[in-house]
Image (cartoon, rainbow, N blue to C red; front, top):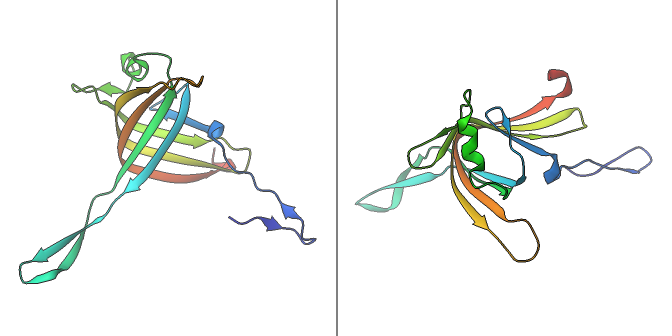
Length: 160
């Protein structure tokens, strides 16, 4: 969004979000020690050929998936798996070690009238790659995730 100007041609400053504005929840649990989260929506097309023509006859649409990574400042060896130990937890650890949660939310704290929110549904989290770089920065604990669906919302302050 370009900067706006008032009638006297003064630039009106816009507020943008930083990483410290993001709060992530797995089910109802707020994730602590969050370093970063990133995701992209993946979908595509597949060409269908026949033997008589080198050009595709049609294109099939593929399903949509959300692929992403979530990183933490390393503090506990089983940080995410502890969430499944709660009696009322919807977080499940599958037999292969993958963590399943029905919903993950990324909410952007805002002092504006609108709060952006991304809701990931049917989320599978795997990995747990530890990255240590001897430069004084925290050790990173990095997980990959796949979500079956994403909802993108701009929640108005009056809707809360």
